[in-house]
Every structure is written in C-alpha cells, then in structure tokens.
Amino acid sequence: MKRVFNFYAGPATLPYEVIEEASKNVLNFMNLGLSILEISHRSKEFDDVIKTAAKDMKELLNLGDDYSVLFLQGGASLQFAMIPMNFLGREETADYVDTGRWSSKAIKEAKLFGNVNVIASSKDKNYNYIPDLNRINFTKDASYVHITSNNTIYGTQFHEFPDTGKTPLIVDMSSDFMCRELDMKKFSLVYAGAQKNVGPAGVTVVIIKKDMLERIKREVPIILKYETHVGKDSLYNTPSVFGVYVIGLVMKWLKNTGGIKEIERINREKAKLLYDAIDEMSDFYVGVVEKNSRSLMNVTFRIRNESLEAKFVEEAKKNDIIGIKGHRSVGGLRASIYNAMPIEGVKTLVDFMKNFAIKNG
Ligand SMILES: *Cc1c(COP(=O)(O)O)cnc(C)c1O
Image (cartoon, rainbow, N blue to C red; front, side, top):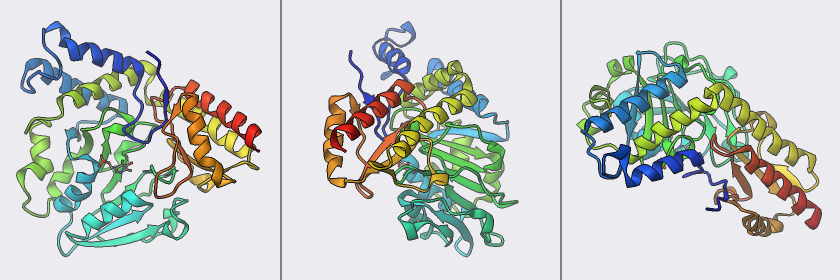
C-alpha cells in the first residue's frame, strides 16, 4: 500500500507499525477468534490492555502513584467544561491565559461556572506569540491557572511553564502531549485529545493529581465527576475500547523509539529542518509566528505571494504531501509534524518547498 505523508492537524498521522498491528487485531484479537472491535470492555484481555496502556504512559511520563491516568470521551472540548464544573466555585476565580481559539473556548465554558480572569492574552497580534508569564500577577487564591501548551491553529507553544505555587496548574496539551520531556509534577491536571499525538479520535487522556479530588466545588452528574473515573479506572462506563487499545500500541512504539527523550530529539530535528527552510527562503516564505514562540508540532507559514498558496497545496498533493492547508481561521499553510511524522516526511516537504520556490519565485 502506498502511504502519503499526512500533515493534518488532527486526526493525524500514526506510526505505520501501530496501524499494521491494529489492523491484524481488528480481524483477530490476540488469536481469540474475535475482533478488538467486538471484545467486551469487562473481559480480562481488555482489562489488561487498558491497565497496561495507563501503566506505560505513566512510566514514559515519569508519573508517580499520586497521579491517575484516565481515558475519557467527549474530546478535549468536554474537559473545557468539566474542569470548571468540578473545580471552580460560583464565587471563585480561575486564571486563564488566552493564546487562541482553544483557550477562548475553554474560557467561555469556565464563565458559566464562576469568575474568569484572563491574566494574559496574545489576541492583540492574532495569537502569533506566547505572552511572557514572568511579568504576570496571578489572582490571589485563584482556583486554578489554565494554559493551552500548544496552539494548534496558530503554531505557537509554551517553552516554559509558570510557577503557580500552591495554585493548581491545568494544561490543555492536546497537540503536544508527550512530544518533549517535561517535569510533570508541575501540573495538577493535564488533558489531551488523543487524535493529535497519541492515538485515534474518540479518547481523551486526562492526567490528574489525586489531591485535586479534594477541591471539588459542587455536585455534578456522576459521569462528569473526575472521582467517578479515578475510582473505576476509566471503566465506569464503556470506554472507547479500540481507541484505548491503539493508545496502548502507541505507548509501546514510543518505548521502542527510545522514550520521550528520544522523541523530543527527533521532534527538534524535524522542526529545525522546516523552520530553517522557511528562514533560508525568506524572500519567498514567511513564518507566521514570533520565532521564540514557534511550535515543535504545528509549523505555520505563508507564501509572500499569498495567491500561490492554493497552487502550493494542490501541487503538494501530487507529491504525496497532504493536509498542509492552514486552519480556516488563519489561512496560509500549516505542517503538523507530530511524534509519528517520520523525518523523511519533513525532508520530502522541504524538498518540495525548495522546488516550488524555484519554479514560482
Ligand atoms: C484539537 C484541540 C482541541 C479540541 O479537541 P477535541 O478532541 O476535538 O474536543 C482542544 N485543544 C487543543 C489545543 C486542540 O488542539
């Protein structure tokens, strides 16, 4: 089968080994004579799958027993609501940093439950930079601080996280989860839609520090309580069985690749290839975001002659490069180079960019 290089922002490319292994098990799961699509979530075999996936993820992230790994549904978008529903009292204030559309959506949901203080924003420049949080005053006694670590649409990424002291730091890591080594102890809750960096659509990973369960502010529906899912190890109701299974395979792949340290090295190499190409051909291409805010995962750029962008996307397709068009709200071009994008994919794109610039410059 011919594979194209998939630069879509999400759902996104997965390691081919993972797809191959999953496809075999769609036909016959562990030689049990049934498909992974058919197996009971209460079976011993699936119990093993979900426990191992969580264990491997914890190991890769260096997480201790004071954290739980959950596999939920409803996307990162449900977390936008579930977080304030559980942790923001009516009279309380939560601090949010607004670095783009996803942060804004999270802010909208939080406002339904309590006060929101937008402590920093990059809206003034169409979100093309990460605000400097070293000069920010956090709200005294805030319920939590919420940050979007990587802004998928604009291509910006936090390269350092603030010290919020006793205030819990909550991070939407949907588009850069497990892409680099981080001290996870800084975070009280991390969430990520799996479809960008760790699996297929349909699962949301939530990493929650157990002491957060002492901060619940109101009675909420059982299905929306973190406590429910922590207590039942993500098996309160039927989870996305196939999704969790594939995440497990991706964790194995990450381990075989050399863990987070090695994937970070590769990610930095890929990002450098692409940003260097943009900068070296700066009479033709231009990066969208400020250099010190550039994302390792979503590389956004434009062609100085914007009328050539449609042609770029069209011709890229003929060179097995797909999903390169920018998000409709910012336009231009975007290459999403998540963990599973091989370096050959980035090299193919860079070669194509060079040829395109020569032909159309
Ligand atoms: C994609 C994305 C989301 C939305 O995820 P869903 O799973 O579709 O709800 C939220 N935050 C960020 C940073 C994203 O990239």
